[in-house]
Amino acid sequence: MKTLWKAGTLAALAVVSAQAWAQVTVTEAWVRGTVPKQTATGAFMKIRSDKDLSLVNAASPAANIVEVHKMLMHDNVMVMRAIDELPLPAGKTVELKPGGYHVMLIELVKPLEAGQKVPITLTLSDKDGKKTKVEVTAEVRAMTAGHGHDRKH
Image (cartoon, rainbow, N blue to C red; front, side, top):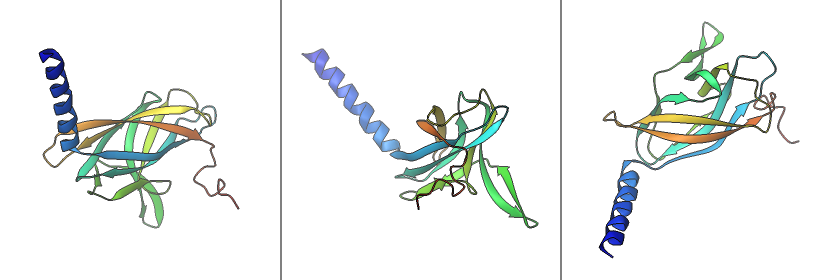
């Protein structure tokens, strides 16, 4: 009976300590499909945390290089740049979307077809530098997704 009680107590403490760190919710995760020989694509999602965090890294077995990017206007030209961190303010949903912040999958291992699933690991950091990982499964959507072609009329 003591062993069962100890195991239950340890499990409860693990849950409490994980909850004390942060509750992070990732929704609507998707990746834009590709054509043969295409070497890069974007991943998009909505991230919400109950405490201030930053997205500091991403990784996926679908690509050799994974970076967090933002789109911005520079000399009247839209450019894409890798960023070191993306703030995730407490209680606010941060949307990674085409034309804005997104996860870039570079040097794809193979083409990505609509309907496939792509695992992505997000690394989040709190203000003290403590890091945690969040596993996401993103569905591959048609190449035209996010360009207005996927809207229902």
